[in-house]
Length: 281
Image (cartoon, rainbow, N blue to C red):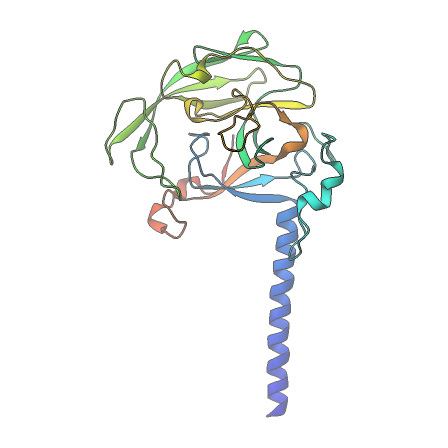
């Protein structure tokens, strides 16, 4: 009887040890190479929808204080581990982001994580005119691509309602947004949405991107707080993004792993199975 008890205790100990090691390895892998994010807002529709669960490649551009891994099961945070390079606007094993990448970055003022498309590189000049984007004095190619349709209903865990170009839409109705395909000079293309003409973000002054900084815009142009709007150093007011430092970049969004249109991932009837494991363009 004593031998069986000892054997059972050893088996239980081995099982617990295996689970702890597996969790530790998963934590290290997650912290060092990839970081998961939920998409909480519609600023990147239709490329990213509210409720998409994505993996961000932290190796793509190297590591900074914003993307440095944490140490699992400890109080060592990225800021503590890589705080010695904060403010130097540099990265360890640094790589260069490419125009058109979908990027997660840390907000320069609030520290919150944002996800937008990289449009402007250091030295670029950008301007919006009547809803069209000009890069270094030339209007980007774009063409109409029909209408983006979605149901007027509460979206995601926050339960927000979408904005529509077809006026006031009742719950359960069809919400429309005009869609265009925009093409960058390097040939990369992506859909952009327009809700209403003549908004503040549709007509801007010229932005001169400084060295060591980048310019980001959301694909859902009328529903995105991005580099078109200046930073406000007042935590009591909503702030724009302005230019984003190289060191504030967390990583490149590579793939949608899971997607749910409901308020909880456990609402399996709201899962968007057609978006599972979809590459982010």
